[in-house]
Each structure stands twice: as C-alpha cells, then as structure tokens.
Image (cartoon, rainbow, N blue to C red; front, side, top):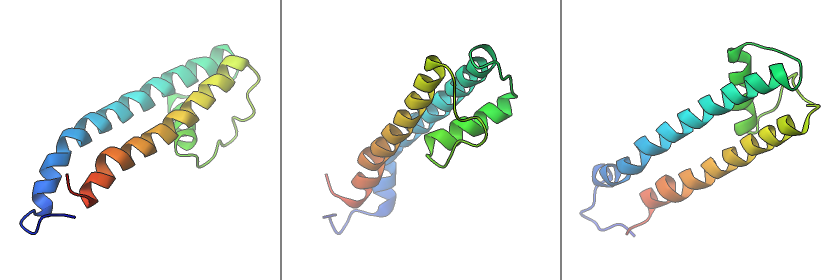
Length: 108
C-alpha cells in the first residue's frame, strides 16, 4: 500500500527511469524486425514489399492482432523470424506489466 504522503507525481518520477529505456528498446526492436522482415520477404520468400508494409506486419505480429495477406510463409527462417516477433511481443507485455504497471500500484 502507498504511504499517505506519497503522491502520484512522486511515483511517476520513480518509474520514469524505466519508461524511456523501455520505449527506446521497443522502437529499436520494431525497426530491426521491420528491416529483417522486409529483407526476408524479398530474398527468402520472393515477395518484395515496401518497408511500410513490413512495418505493418511486424506491428500486427507483435501485438498479436493478425497477419494480413503475408501468411503463410514458405521458408524456415521466415517462420522463425515471425515466431521471434510473436515471443518478443509477449515479452514486452510482461516487462511493461512487471516494471511499470505493477510498481505504479504497489509500494516499495
């Protein structure tokens, strides 16, 4: 339970040290997956597409909202890449809950 004198602003300042690195890491991970996916679709699957389309597929995959028209993938490396994107999306959710959300509602 929070101490009565502890304000939401104080808690936010404590958690800020986690937010900026977490958001930076997520952005870098999404960008890396976008480039890998784009290159993989062109070289491994023989289906070149725009970076924007690759970005959309990566976001859909990491947020588990769907895959659009790219599924199914024919090669093992592309299936492994998609699985890695799915697992990293789940990992991000767990980290956000454990490092940011839970501490906001509990005391140290």
